[in-house]
Amino acid sequence: MPDMIPGKTLSRNFFHEIAKPILDRHFPGLSYTAGFLGYGSDVLGYDDETSRDHMWGPRFYLFLRPLDLVCEDEIRAVFSRELPYTYCGYSVNFSAPNPDDHGVQLARYITEGPVNPLIWIQTVSEYLSEQLGRADIGNFTAADWLSISEHRLLSLASGELYHDDLGMQAILDRLAHYPDAVRRYLLASSWDAIACEEAFAKRTGTYGDEIGSRLICARIVERLMRLCFLYRNTYAPYSKWFGTAFDRLDVPEKLKTTLRDALRADDVLSRERLLTEAQAQVAALHNESGLTAPLPAEIVPYFRKEILVIWAERYAEALQETLRGTELEHTPLMGTLSQVANLSTISDDPAHYRRIRKLYE
Image (cartoon, rainbow, N blue to C red; front, side, top):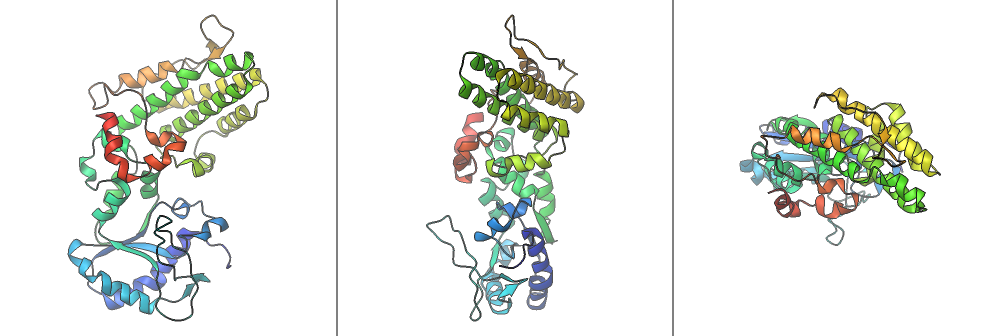
């Protein structure tokens, strides 16, 4: 296997050095957009040697105007005939999509015959509908945003266009971040979820339920991490890359260390101390954001019990108050299905978009 080249770099160079000259030569008047987008780890910049086992290699999307789709077969035929068999040591030829494995394609090294490259040809609207469940981005309501997979939004926000006659970048720019009210709603929902359990990591631990205490601690840590993504106006990926993305997120290293230490704390008192310290540090991020008036971030007793909390519900309530007059004013603070890691088979499938949307109607 050749030396590892990040998929993003490999595909960018492949387009400009190999594919674009072919398009320029055979279709000089064609208006198109080409780029590197999609669900893969390579789009997010997380690919490594393991990623190369499927759907990885020199690849790109080619978007055409609807009236130019008549050229699709001819374009494919030209690519099949003129593309090299390898590029930088990697196969340009791939197997046919496997219908029994979600259409997965594998690299197939050949030395003769037509090339079957990883080049997808469709319209911009077809692609957006395929990825998000609908294409009319300008008409999205708050319920639409909350129904769409956060990982898919990230895969579009992280993409790169090589050539853009069709103005697709303007569409991707509109998808770069959650709208303000949706972001506030998701922040409120995460703080509310923390408030429901913030006293329980200590309570379960002192009762002798070590497993329960650790599980609650881990859930709160995840919610705090999700808050960090939202305060930094950054989409969070699904569970496989969630921790990796957080490690690269622009938040204080002290906070990252406190969260890690809370997860590995072996006694309930250390776990409580670290967990409340982490909550207070994320509360500081909230106060820096200016989304509400500053709120107390001190660690205090939970009613008259020997349990420490920061009263996370204050943050949820203050954020929810800012939603008055918006579409989300009366929406229960349940967040999105994307924020529940083991529901990705539902939340990441655009086929379920309309069913999910009913949760917010």
